[in-house]
Image (cartoon, rainbow over all chains, first blue to last red):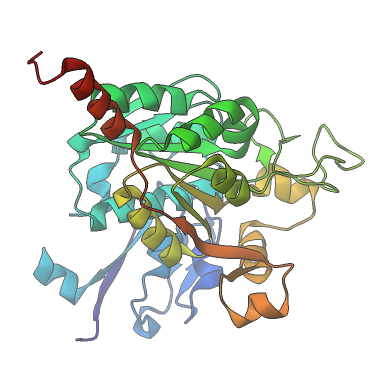
Length: 73
Length: 269
């Protein structure tokens, strides 16, 4: 299986409520809350595309776009 | 297809509190439906009252936001009149097992093809944090400042005893397991009960000093174990997760069709 390659983290700042679940459970500490308590991808180069942030987000506010997804689309 | 295709975006951001487990359960359900490639025109969601019940407004399926505890009764009506539709009924712990306790056990007994999801946050969140039949003894709530003395139901045991033909448990933390279980529950022909432990940081977490949403999720991780795992064998006090019942028994609508056929004795309607 080909490894997923990160394209970008799409974050919906209007939907993010800053609960911090994605930040706390990211296995690679890619995410952080900014001064407005909204999530940002601080270290996208460390992302392993596990997509657990996307799956655990209670607000559907984060989506991890990967290269293989694009081919499927 | 993206999960966004299955929601009514105009109602977002949703009304649930920051870090509410119900949002994660909605997320898991959308992924399950997406992975099964179900057509939203074939899906019906009925819900009762409470934080959990607001979920039916957010999904772009056929939806009924009904009265407290009666979501399963409405779902039974929909299913019997249109058996080709898939019924998903998310309920809160109080909605399913206090106010709707009777509907719950009888829907399970009939084995009607409905997927019941019990979003168990162990509290009545919307009305201000009263204890529910799933809070358990020794927990604090606004109606139990000196802690509750009521024991909790075990949803899995209750549903199994009542005759549900698919019974499973997961948590808001274990998203991949939840998606997998929900897919199986939706595909199961018969009454499926999926209990998903959810966190209410606003009421339950604050009252019981369980910390913020992430700490409550970690608690779910630490206090549960998969059935058949070494961890559960070593510590039977952990809450088991997984699929407990998956039986192939006659489904209600099918049995009802057979009654119609017998009554008609081969005549055409």
